[in-house]
Image 1 (tube, rainbow, N blue to C red):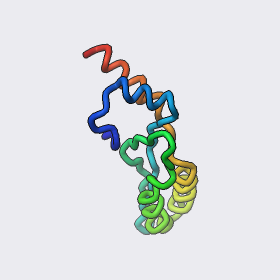
Image 2: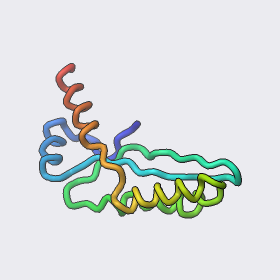
Image 3: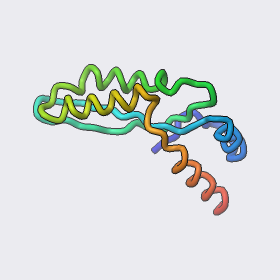
Image 4: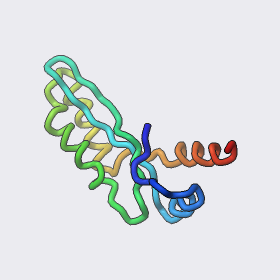
Length: 108
């Protein structure tokens, strides 16, 4: 997965901003076609301290709202789940990403 929003930042800068409240999140989306429904995750987004994670997830929320409901039975179920996750600011994956970034720094 690609991380969106960290271009040009060093590991030290990332760690400092994370200590100040930055986080990494993914957004969920659902697309349905009659009897088939697909639930997927977006790329990883870097949310700076003070930024609203819900706003960054609006494209995924809109996609799910328009195209997620139409598959029976999973479309409505997954759409509600995806919308709930996105409207709460996305799924926080900061701890996993920080471990990965810091381990890569040690190996390099």
